[in-house]
Image 1: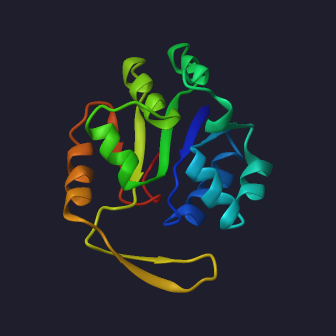
Image 2 (image 1 turned 45 degrees about the horizontal axis):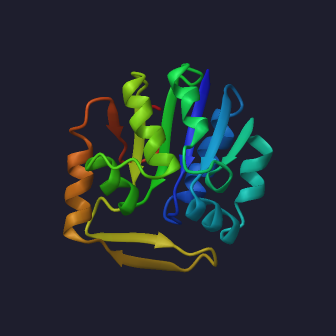
Length: 170
């Protein structure tokens, strides 16, 4: 199986996502795509090296240019599934409103055109979001109503499965 895992700029759930990538990579080839912000956060949280060790390939948005040539690989069906986790409120909003102006939003749009299921784990799905900083300190973030609404709308898009957590089958 070949999996395309996209990481946006959220710290919330990132450690759990890396654990899942490590587990999936034991039985599948996992290509990991980073948005610019996703790469920054993975480095800041000290997780990039762990991802690098288990990923079969790393794609950085900054190396793609404006046309995102990597996206053509979805049309060729090189990946059986696409996972966007964690998915920021910004990326969620863009997907909901069909804005494909970044590498990851282009990937989601092209996956839909290629009939490849996209699994998305949005970070801003509940009002009071409990998360931890790289230091381990627990914090609560108050999510905006519009972001919670966009998460609900995301589940109405054909070909997208919204995950509540990483325990679900992906």
